[in-house]
Amino acid sequence: MDIRLRELVSHSSRYTYQVNSFISSLLSSCHDLSHSAIDASPSFGSVLGGCVMTKPAVVLIGADKGGVGKTTVARTLLDYFAHHQVRARAFDTEVPKGTLKRFYPDVADVVDINYVPDQMRIFDTVNSTDASVSLIDVSAGLLSPTLRALRNIGFIEAAKKGHITFVVFHILGPSIASLDEIVGTAAYLGDGKYFMVKNFINNTHFFEWDEATHAAYFKRIPDAVEITIPKLPEMAAEQVDLASVPFATFIANKKQGGDPASYSFVLRGYVHHWLDTVWAEYDRVGLTDIVEAKESPRPPVGKPRPVMRVADAT
Image (cartoon, rainbow, N blue to C red; front, side, top):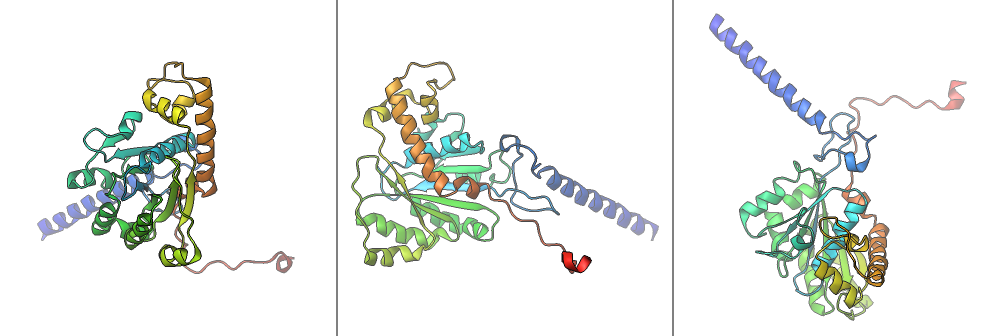
């Protein structure tokens, strides 16, 4: 009898220690809202008591057609997040080398999005990484398969329940095939934020969608928002590409390691103007508010205290 009692007491003590450790772990991950964004701790997409925590965000950039400038858009987003002190990590799915990683060697990793261990490397760590945003540059033709995989692993459902912020930048081409892509994307999107991007990277002439076309395609994603990326002058784009640096680093006349460079003043001016225009589009749609969304604290348990009007108190 005494032996059984001692076992119960020992088990209870171990359980109490585990619960206290778990609570301490959650409390330590809460944001100190008085800190600046750059000093904020990583978030875990939940609320403990009155401690508000930022949900992790996954930003997917892709298309089912190549040559539409997906990586260009990804680069503008990484520069935008850095400018706004939003911690971001990136995954380049152009295996084996990767284009995005060439510009962001310290931020981007090359992964095979169809390879289950690499999927785990991305999505199993969204809650534990120092970055609040995980950006994925999806290879041409893999947008729909990637969305299908996210649905199958339960990621879309997690976003629908509000545990994760999910954002899709769908880079459109000029043909009717891009409208068919929209239909395919809508089947997997769930409650994710959906941006349709017209990227004029190659002086593309986009068709104008008439009312009948809009009704046929766009009603499937009624909250879709259109973003326009203007064309960067070719010589400026080529020089940034040769420098293999982010757009913001080129504008600052710096090399990849931070040493001074000697880029053209004129070309830096063109890139600066172009990037400001792109960032204005991201500001217009409230991108930083979306990726830094916080879950509201749970309502207090019990009956709320009645509100007394000033007239009643006098």
